Length: 170
Picture (cartoon, rainbow, N blue to C red):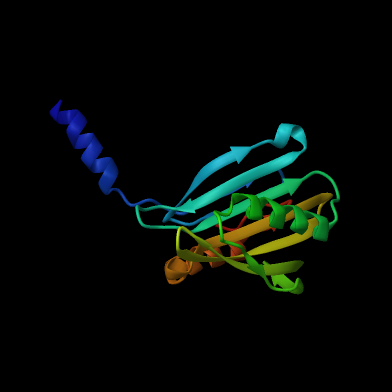
């Protein structure tokens, strides 16, 4: 029993480390304070992954969807807007910026920022979408606005290490 307790304490005290992720033709580095919270093969049509910031009062979220087909980027954005609207509580609604060309990990992308309130707490995010290696790729970054300073470094680390078709630099 004492050995088991010692192992639990040791495990909880060991520092988590960044680790590389490579699957379905995409790769990046998962930051130390983040964890993979969900994965789905989309029934062979692509791949979905969500990464969340660890900790009790944390709200950082990155989700990456790769679809093994070419889907119109604005159509995807409209589906996202509709889905978010369906999840809103009464009286809440999201606001969006106009889509604009941008760069994500040296890749030309289309980016839209958005804000919304969830249970009285303001959230902000951006939806990054692009075509790459016979895939449509969508990256979503989101967090409570009050957590933005704690989540930004993780967002940047994922972005800076993101690659399609080759392993992320680690």
